[in-house]
Length: 51
Image 1 (tube, rainbow, N blue to C red):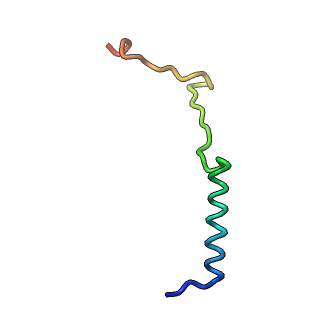
Image 2: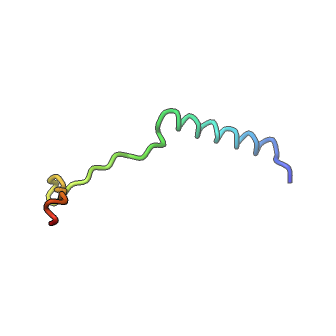
Image 3: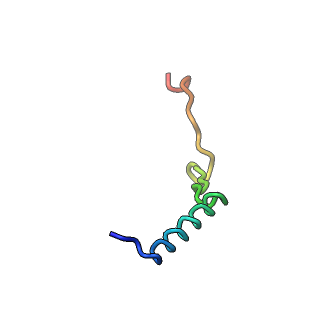
């Protein structure tokens, strides 16, 4: 199976774009913020409270 020149060019262009996206940091996950009821901060429990 041979790769046509057009297919090779498209593959190369996609790889270049993926590389630029990585360098610019556009591929990192978005920030998420957790909140409790009514938008208040989430309360965390310590091990002291569990005993």
